[in-house]
Length: 160
Image (tube, rainbow, N blue to C red; front, top):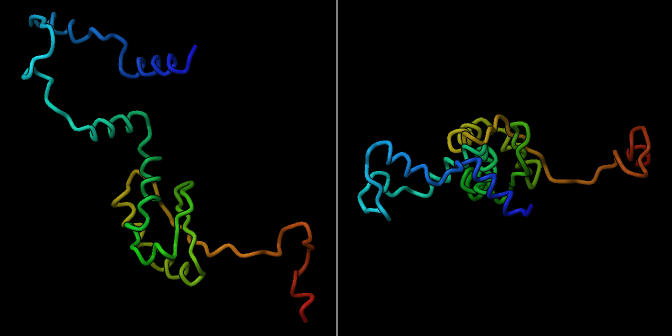
């Protein structure tokens, strides 16, 4: 089977398989079957595409991943322009948003603002499921791991 045929079958299962459902319903209600579409028939009201996409995303279980990616993409709007220059979201895992900061002082300042940021995130992105924020400093080299590490106090042993 081709991928297109599999996809078609999947959509058929989701949205129904009988294209003549509308005609049967019209026959049951006693309305005469018309050929073509009439401008003011019931069910012809225009609907917004956004609402349709939202309902489809909710039905397929995509609401939470979409909200998480939207939160990460809109980080500058969430925390402000100046703060977003010095911090960047790394990811959301297990309800914890991890944010990497340019320096440890920025990480400390953002830790002090954690409650306010959490309230703002929960208000704007409730489907993201963020329960906590973890701020980390910049990546720095470590002597704790690696091919030449030894147990003990580490590099302080040789400096004094």
